[in-house]
Amino acid sequence: MTSIEIPTDADLVRFVYREARLLDEHRFEDWLDLFTADGRYWMPLEWGQTDRKLTASLLDEDLLLLRVRVERLKGNRTFSQKPKSRCHHVLQMPAVDTRDTSGNVYETYTPFHYVETRLDEQQLYAGWAKHTLTVEGGKIKIRMKRVDLVNCDAAFGNIQLFM
Image 1 (cartoon, helix red, strand yellow):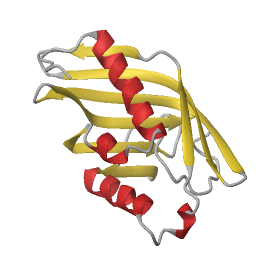
Image 2 (tube, rainbow, N blue to C red):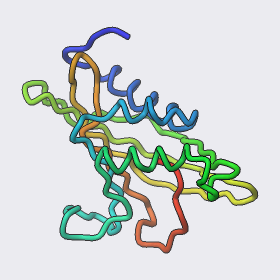
Image 3 (cartoon, helix red, strand yellow):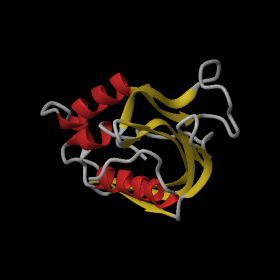
């Protein structure tokens, strides 16, 4: 992989597609490497939610919590993952919404459908992923991944994997 100083729109779009593929292939360690040290994965609970600290969220995890979830998924005593859950992302073409090269901040917007399955249960989710990206050490990294579900205020069972 070549070193990047200022990513093109095509670089950013490729990055979003690659991230989804890593999740679909259960390459969770490689996926974690896509995050900055202060990166976050956020799934708001309310439609149009703007504050993740003062309002409850479905998920609001820093890199440490993401690592704990990945370790749990790999664990031999994680009985809720025998057999393991599988997932499939269907992404629309990501759009690059913001390019702030002087601030090293790039934002993408990607509508998606996501299927998660285990045994005879299959769940379908639809929503939008918003990536706040930056370049560190010549690589594109995730500073924030926000996942807004269409039905974010519905009652959900366990979401085992990552959208």
